[in-house]
Length: 464
Image (tube, rainbow, N blue to C red; front, side, top):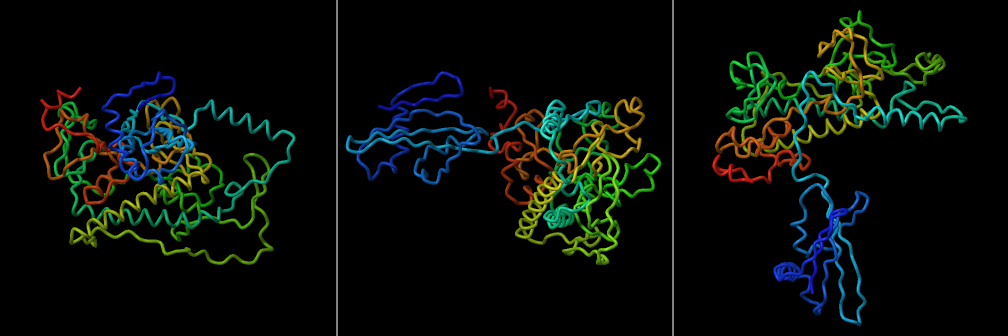
């Protein structure tokens, strides 16, 4: 007797014991029962589990029909109850099939210029957490501030900061080389780009005189600046200094925000010096402090980089790869640099605060945003040009620039009627995939690699 039950939360289980199910399970478990006596197998239930429940599947590699369950971003529980002969006791084992990345996920939401960015953490949650911290701190002695709030560096993150800044430079140099062999196009009137020999036909242009062109793009050759969006921020010689005023907006240099984040985390760049304290500050009030006396300390040694910092290669010295193997190796190295920069920057942002304006792309690396009144977003007159600062997320610091994924570069171009069947990926990932690198697992859900694309519009109309 065989029974199969599929249960999802409070949904009523579906019980069945048809001959087709018995044949499927017996065929799949043939190798499992090859050297054993005939036993009584019962598939008790298949249900969803929480994230915390996890069991490795290494001991169940012979169960072939488990591969069909490895779809979707959820977790399935498969309970096998084996009731053998009377002289052998029955036992129950639970399998958990876990997939961190869903099979298909929605594209990143597009926010118009009139919409405000959502808060990473809702205001209600922030206020609740603040009340809890205040309640726990009552009657307790004040704890000393940890770095980097006390002016010192987090020593464990200094090597990571050097990895991030070198990965950024390596990424820029490799993209310049890949642009020699992979075609990337940019629209003349908007900020949209496309990776492929032919630009996509979708009417999504929002640039100048887009209505005259019915939303069609006018494509031209793209550069590295079109792929990696330059997000600049003010360079702070002292990251604990007072906020930048509106009159200082032109006297303070602006550099890429990722570079500024690495400098504040401990990277030494002679062109952009930064103040390094050797003793923690003395806090007077919430907004006032004084530096500790360092006169009794020995003279500081000249600050030098821990590791050599890479430099960008000029466009005139770029040498494209000469063979197919070099292109693939270059694409794989570019993907690793992309992931190193994003993962490392995300870790640095957890210790060194980064702010973003809720109305425009302005980013500030520091505890509090600057006071420069240069916000030109929707209804900025009501705010007198001031920014609405909030905590930044990784995509604010390093915009991924999603583009349409081309399933076959050498095949037919994308069709406007089949737009719902195509996927999207960050521009850097799409360039590396078209150059021969394997698609990373975390981007496959939006690339929609498992969706069959109809050969014609008539075939697409038949899809339910």
